[in-house]
Amino acid sequence: SQTIHQWPATLVQPVGSPLSLECTVEGTSNPNLYWYRQAAGRGLQLLFYSVGIGQISSEVPQNLSASRPQDRQFILSSKKLLLSDSGFYLCAWSVLAGSTDTQYFGPGTRLTVL
Amino acid sequence: GNSVTQMEGPVTLSEEAFLTINCTYTATGYPSLFWYVQYPGEGLQLLLKATKADDKGSNKGFEATYRKETTSFHLEKGSVQVSDSAVYFCALRDGAAGNKLTFGGGTRVLVKP
Image: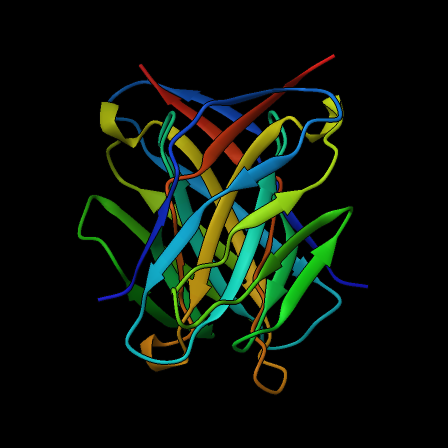
């Protein structure tokens, strides 16, 4: 069966520091991968998605970036964090099967920028 | 563009009460519709889905019917439990928009014993 991992689970970082969040998927090949952010008390915002190694699409311009160095690895980064980057970051994967493309989510990383 | 609108919460209920969470959508194509649930401190879990008009998704006592004529996908449960306390998200996937999910703002449900 497929599983998705995210780490770290929680992170507290000062403003201006760098960021690296990692997401890995097991049990599937060539998944679509997604990064979402959930700000406190709000819905989910799609940040990036990837349909293959090295292929990244950005949905929202900001100081974050994403990379996919391996088929089942998706990394979210920042060179300098802002206070507004605080939130709950969720990684998701999907595989198109027929007409269905269901996304499955990881446990999330809670980031607090101070 | 695509959008999903959910009723705002919080919704507070007593155990065994009937739950309805309204969800309506706007999409350019023929979307698939989903309900996800987020328990406190956790990520999202797929609750149920429907891929075409008049389909009914069901899971764990929850049901939602894809109504194309009213562009709705309301979530219902006949008798809620304390363990159903969570945030519920309605979402659509429009194949014409790159298979990306568009989420509603979420509805927090609190069930009291």
